[in-house]
Image 1 (cartoon, rainbow, N blue to C red):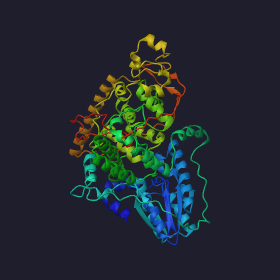
Image 2 (image 1 turned 180 degrees about the horizontal axis):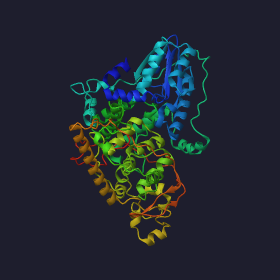
Image 3 (image 1 turned 45 degrees about the vertical axis):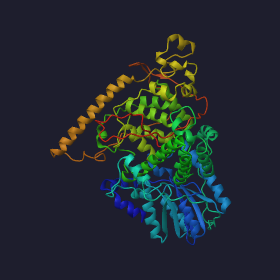
Image 4 (image 1 turned 60 degrees about the vertical axis):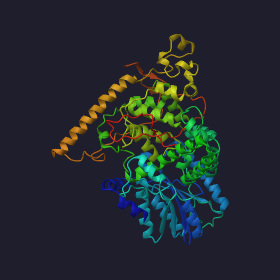
Amino acid sequence: MLIGMISSRFSGTQRLVAAYFARRCSRSVAFFSGGVSLYAIRRPRRDLRLEDNPALAAGVRSGPVIAVFIWAPEEEGYYCPGRVSRWWIKQSLAHLDSSLKKLGTSLITKRSTDSVSSLLDVVKSTGATQVFFNHLYDPISLVRDNRAKETLSAEGVSMRSFNADLLYEPWEVVDDEGLPFNTFSDFWERCLTMPYDPEAPLLPPKRIISGDSSRCSSDNLVFESESEKGSNALLARAWSPGWSNADKALTTFINGPLIEYSKNRKKADSATTSFLSPRLHFGEVSVRKVFHSIRTKQTLWANEGNKAGEDSVNLFLKSIGLREFSRYMSFYHPYTHERPLLGHLKYFPWLVDEGYFKAWRQGRTGYPLVDAGMRELWATGWLHDRIRVVVSSFSVKVLQFPWTWGMKYFWDTLLDADLESDTLGWQLITGTLPDGCEFLGIDNPQFEGYKFDPNGEYVRRWLPELARLPTEWTHHPWDAPESVLQADGIELGSNYPLPIVEIDAAKERLKEALSQMWQLEAAARAAIENGMEEGHGHSTDEFVPIAFPQAMQMEPEVPVRNNSTMIANRRYEDQIVPSMSSSFFRTEDEESSVDIRNSVIDSRAEVPIISM
């Protein structure tokens, strides 16, 4: 029923894209029932929790339950989970299994290259007659779920799916003509004025009657290699995955940092956010519980006349809205993770320079705020949202790399890597959405540093080579007197690079590139009007994505430019990070733009990742 409803709302282009994704399925969890029910968790299901889990609750009500997790990462193609994501899944699954055992059952784990076939095998070996799962809205999951439903239905097994990832289903939030919204402001206004509230979160089950799984043994799942364990050990010092820990994190945030959320949201060098984005991504806490908990606090503060608290709540709820909108856009525009929604961006002449891209990844661009952010990302899997804006904007506007390159690297390295949220954020930064940023505007990282790291503490934490540099020069060491640099042991171009690109030169190149883009688009439209060719009017037509670089690791070879002149390559060791960072991120307000050529927008207003 769900898949039928979704399919009926797809345009012709969306159906083609969905068919394309049929070859790229994923990992998952399921709950089985009937005589026996199966609760299925196939990654990337976002329901690694007991509380407010509709599929699990339905299975428990039906009778004996078997819970199974199917791990088939190869089915995800380019978007196979990165090292830090796999570490989180490992810890969270262990926590979930421990919780299930306390209630009377356990989690079956399966390693697979075909999750639907493995699901069918589990059904046959356990005798399950029903399968319960929580559905998602990206094209990969939609196609896979439809295939699973057809396969199991042919075997006489029913499947039921539930909403566990959104406040409202995408088809519920439409305009007065029944059409989907294209801008966040309109979408979120409708969500906040819906005639009914999101459903209240469900309590966790008190007990689970376990089905017979004696003929269905678990596979040993390997989530990390030996070489990754050392780096992953650092993550455990900062994070405690697991659904009950997520509940504690939510309570801590509401009773602590939330009240000053609006005041502290731009502080990049301190813990001013909720820590909830990875927990929401992996489904350790439901968005409905977060929403209702925040609204309860909002009511309390409103009754007390606490204006600062209300402002913070509204800003945080907006970040929840951005997360909702990312899934909404993925549902109605399923190709947006690899193609711009606004068609003219397909004519933009992106720079394909793997050497500079390597320098950006390694934190060797010569701009301290950018470099500190990229080093923190590699070391911790985390970035404050202000720093995400800085490094992503630098990537697409200053270095002018394809936005999909940066998004893919974030996917590989972020703990809270989330395809829908990451796609929305990078497209907003690049100006490829109707209410995205003005692409023409470039924010100078030097001045961004003055705003978000005024005392230089963040840069000193992540760039030990600049740790002794006086604050007045922290964000532009190239202007520091030679005597100061010598006293602090800094040799620009040697132990810290000079800027690889001059900002003024980048602005000029960006203007030229945008002019070229509009000329190419105009020529394509003229050709269509003259009947010479077809298919250039939509971003999905004849679109050829730019291939990802062959390797996205941190290599020692980094090209360095001496001011505007390239000098010989130097050999650098991978950076050494001094400590784990305590800085976390949050979502900022966003601005709207209908005509990217004529609007004037503050490009700092958007966030490249939807986060809380």
